[in-house]
Image 1 (cartoon, rainbow, N blue to C red):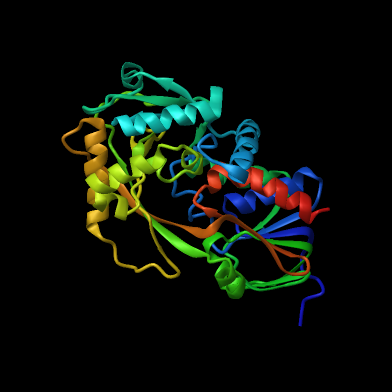
Image 2: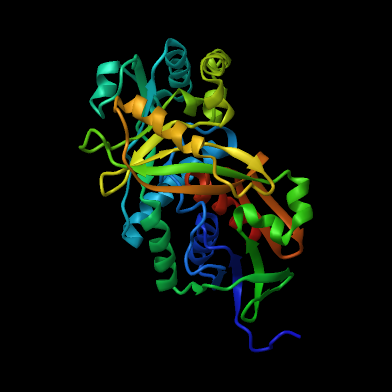
Amino acid sequence: MTNPDAESADVLVVGAGIVGLACAYEAAERGLSVVVVERDARATGASVRNFGHACATAQSGKALGYGRVAREVWLRLADAAGFWAERTGTLMVARSSEELAVLEEFSDLRGEEAQMVTAAEVAEHAGFGAGVVGGAWLPQDLRVDPREAVAKIAAYLQARGVRFHWNTTAHGIEPGEVTTSRETLHADQIVVATGHDVDRHFPQLAAAHGVQRCALRMLRVENPGGGAIEPAVQTGFSMLRYGGFAECPSLPTLRDRLTRETPDLVAIGLNLMFTQRPDGTLTIGDTHSYATTPAPFEDEELDAAVLRETAKLLGAERLTVRERWRGIYASAPEPFLDATPVKGVRVAAVTAGVGMTTGFGFAREVMTDVLA
């Protein structure tokens, strides 16, 4: 039996990760009353366990469009909510002729959004190990500190009247109401933005869309060279993971070379990249494995591979680790899950590991449709 005095709103969002916050932001921008339900005391999932890198330029299709919208929202929100966000750009480092060929083709595709640079120009940004032959500069990409930004967005929304129910689990989701661990809440429209946990609420929907969990390994290390490294730095392994590079005719040749020379690294889904945190340390990573329920046991070789390859990239003998963590995000054959399992309930999830890059653009499209 529902409580007739339970809190109600125009829009109720389940999940306070970046997609949930983006949906709440879009509803608040339209002057609607919004409630957000989050099972933890703060966001602790994929939205804070990432590089803080909005790499829109390397996306393709819908993700490219969402990413371009999202980076403008990020900058606008940074001013409003008081967190750091800058167009620091992305530096793509090429260490082989095959990688350089892909970047040249990509530069032709993206025009001013992707500019070729020489090996000497690459070295101006950071000290790298031997073998760098050139690269590409993606000036429009931006970075944030996810540990700061997500919390400040929530605080900003709360100051605007969005009501947050922290430490509150959504047990039942039905048209017009959400039964939680504390009370039953009512709303005209409900948006479920729980990322990889969509199967906790709608298992048949998740199965139909092939949603799995992608587990990755990341670390925070001391910067062996000291000094500031403004852009996000990516490599040939990164080119295997982003849709924009898949449009390049030379990518299969690069994939063949990396698979032939480093089959172990390709097998663990290495995306060799790093970003610098405000304290000067580097967030490095990452590896990828897929399962509906990931095994709880951590393979030390995954961290060892990331450390070894990052040290090689930076020309360092070894790296000093300050933190290690596992990230988990939703993965599916299609990069975005946007579905209406029951009337008045929308499920929205980025299922490609690019939530920070595309979430605000994706949420705008979802909420425009929901509120129509």
